[in-house]
Length: 114
Length: 114
Image 1 (cartoon, rainbow over the protein chains, first blue to last red):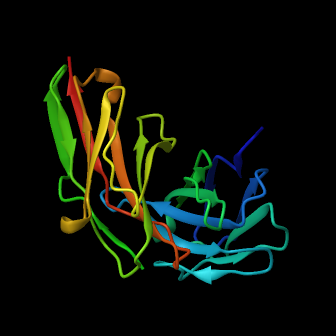
Image 2: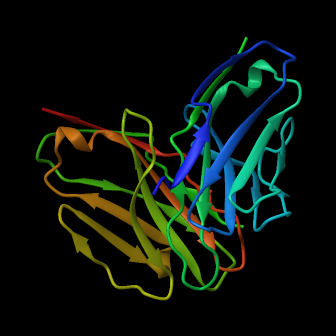
């Protein structure tokens, strides 16, 4: 059982380049999230999804886009990378409903924009 | 939306001392879920505990214990007889049952010295 898998684990981009981070979960979870982690700031929510075909903005959505075409996948896109987007990105999934559980996290993607 | 505050930025202790991490949350939801996560130096996020707002029983699990006080909106976490392997960043998180967002505090870095 893989849980939550993020691809890639590391990436270096030049300013202005684009890329897509993939998050895949095999737990049939409804909710999926993208966070960024920066020193001293904890985890800040970028975008999230409450089900296939739905997305919503979190705290820091600017410069990012997301898509959830399939329930198991949640993609995070950077159309034109900026040095301020250098960060560690975490994806998480969570089952919905009354029988709530903890969020399961991927291993993180370390992105450097030069 | 929830707001989670971890006022302690860093805590340093000597092995075998107890460590208590503070967490204060703000929410408009009448029912909600509270979590503690651990992030060791390797970088992954490890789930530790989950607490429902409608269950105020405080528990102990091995060397971990938590104190949930709805009256003061606090959800403190204690490591008893700390060990070097407990050195990590600890995050408190909250999610309301009517809010899909999972909100994190800024984290507390715990260093346990031998």
